[in-house]
Amino acid sequence: MNSSSIPAHTSILIDAIGTVHSPVIALEQLRIACLVPSITELLCELGLAKYMVARTGFCIHPKELVCDIPKVGGTKDVNVEKLRKLAPTHLIVNIDENEKPTVDLLAQFIPHVVVTHPVCPQDNLAMYRLLGAIFQVSQRAEQLCAAFKASLLQIQADPKGKRVLYCIWKDPWMTVSRDTYIAQMLALRGWRQWQLVESGVAMSEVKRYPTFEWNDDLLDAVDIVLLSTEPYSFTQTHATELQQQIRKPVILVDGEMLSWYGSRAIAGLSYLAQLKLPIV
Image 1: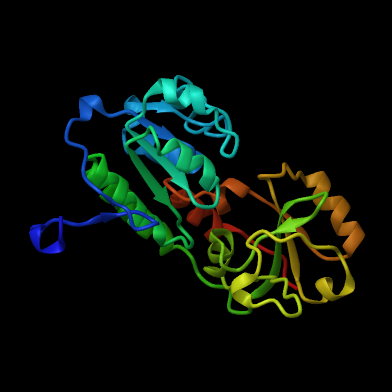
Image 2: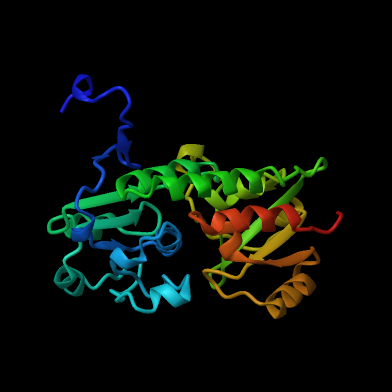
């Protein structure tokens, strides 16, 4: 089908890799598998839980709905044969969270693969509308859009700004690059994520989730360290011990609120708006 054959009032539904999708016609035949925890939650918020036949073990929200949806492994170690037997018609994946060879394999027997890749908070609006249109729940998607916009209006940028280091793992220590969703969330408050710059490496080649070592140069370049509660389960004990070690303010933050896109981003924006960092 070329663009001239599409009615002017019809939106073209295009996912993150340019695949064009069509709205589901026969909802009674719909079977959705989702390999992205935050999007599983979004699908449930869109009223689609009854059509879901597979999720990962990390898809834990909302608990009362996902408990009845079969698990098919993790985001990167999918039980392919179990998923094949569940016979999904649609698969929802994410560029960062799922591995392309696995997705390519699944695409051999799942007719429709929807690829997502929100890189900034505002990308949630397009994702709500894309999934809403594909699965015939656009009215609910627009309600989420309105709620998202209202939460976004709560945020005021810190006029002084702060240089932050957002930690997602230890042993080895890992952080995020500035082009990630997390860094773009922090940027809404005027907080600038530390960036590892290596000699001879172009910015376009900087790793999205680099490892780092604590040293004087790094500590001179940051004001505050943020320890995320996920994917590594940092606790207040970790924060207290690290602060004593590096002599910089260390704050424990809710990783789901700052890294999960989808419907949780609405609450995440409110969390971000109220998050207080020490004066430095």
